[in-house]
Amino acid sequence: MQAIIYEGPSKLAVKDIPMPQVKEGYALVKVSHAGICGTDLHIYEGSHPRAKAPLVMGHEFSGTLESDGVPGIAKGTRVTVYPLLSCGHCTPCKEGNGHVCNTLGLLGIDCDGGFAEYVQVPKESIIPLADNVSNKLGAFVEPAAVAVHALRERGYTPGDNAIVFGCGTIGMVIALTLRVFGCQDLVMMETDPARAKLAQDMGFEVQDPTKVGPMGDYCKSRTGGDGYDWVFDCAGVQPVASVLLEAVKVKGHILVVASYSKPASMPYFLGMAKECDIQFTRVYRLKDFALAAQIVGADPNYEKVITHVLPAAEAQKGFDLCTTKGSGAVKVMFQFD
Image (tube, rainbow, N blue to C red; front, side, top):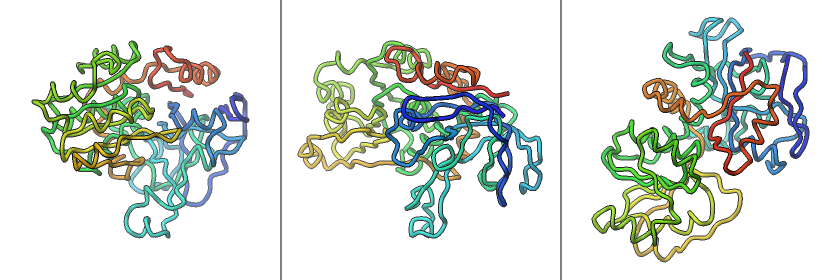
């Protein structure tokens, strides 16, 4: 079968490899679409601490179930896959928090993933796709689940206003899901013109944070002098970390959904003065994933975040699009069927 192989830092190969030998408790999925995640980019650059070459990356994918014996799901069903691998025995797992398992693993990192024509996955991780969710959109359920989890886990209240920093994939799915969850007063911040235009085309107001003046003054001017109820960091860079506490209201909420690749500093006294909270979320629960599989089919804008779909043979082009500033790429996918 054809697969995209990570062979070392900045080195990819597209080659034929043997079909997976399906283990007990696993099932075979014929992959249709698979998306490049920020984690895949860390693997590609050689900075991920667990991923070891040679590796089939990819944990955002859809396809067709090729095995019998999956409870409640017939062979031939179009599916997506919850990619987390939890131990089931550590304290977080026993407390119902397997998504933050002490030894959490992931398809495409700790074992071969979805950048191939076929992949073996745990039977209990398979989620059917509704008829109104395309295979392409099915591979987008994973990032959407990040947003669903963030809002559900931290208790977003419908009607609260929000500011979202970053119009990349996570910023866009946070904004789209906020709209589903009842946010009527939302502004996004983005410096990249192509990404800003994509968000604007979806009906969002987007501002360039380098052009609005002092962030605290701007946010107060938009909110009757208060600042925002919810501040979402979907950028993960120092310039954003520096202004999060300026943007939030007294007793407000800062939610970091971005994965910071470098340590960042914040003006913590301002946080103390406002008695706000700074929270974090990681990935998603199985329930979040199942909900995301429904939500993405309800708004056509989710699919618009997918800016490029390429054949597997163009693997290098896909990663170049993701790592080249100003390329206009947001979500890049490979198609295997």
